[in-house]
Length: 273
Image 1 (tube, one colour):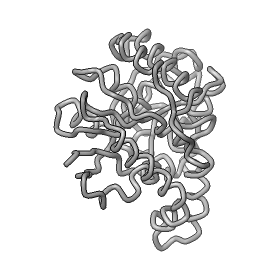
Image 2: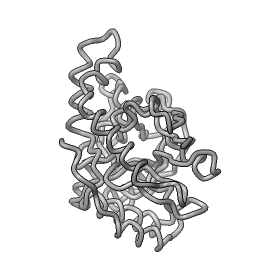
Image 3: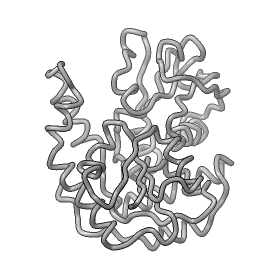
Image 4: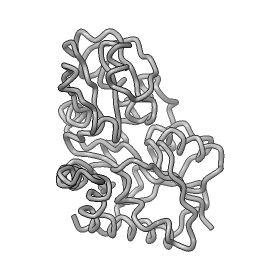
């Protein structure tokens, strides 16, 4: 039995579609930061983890080729919400559920927004975060559902900001495996789950919308148009560039062997999107 840890957010569901029914897989769902902790502790064999954790692991993980959670431009679910102009932000509240998004925010503050705010951890509640700081980073479902207009805030999409800075896709999470775990059959199971999940996007969106059926088309567009599930060559370049910037900014240790491993990745057959 292969112990797999994944993320419970909506944007991960196309990747995990049907995995719980696989007889060779034991699946658990957590927030991204907990998933990373479990992988580092050896309590899961494969984890859908924030990409910055590739630099922080006790070993060099094997990355499943072809699959990721990323974007090329606006992502909609990773954003800084601010009541002041971004270049006036002096205090930034962080949703610490995803370490890659926190790292991205720190890189963009320095490289794109030319600010160096004081960073404070907070629970993902936008109103409370904006009482605590000038601006707030939210990720995942809380970012999609945040009532930012009612709070008089501006939404700055970090996927869009990254693309303006680099011209490359951004990768938030990948499947990372303990050494010796990854096999052709396991990669096939994960690829097939994603293919099935992409085909099931309307059903996934409808289930997430619940009783509010008007939200289903909005959520389906988010999964179809904002999120990229392919770890193709441009995405690998974007991932390597981000990890290099994160290491240069002191956000994570330098791990040249990780970048060398990424350079060898080649995406399998496309996902049919």
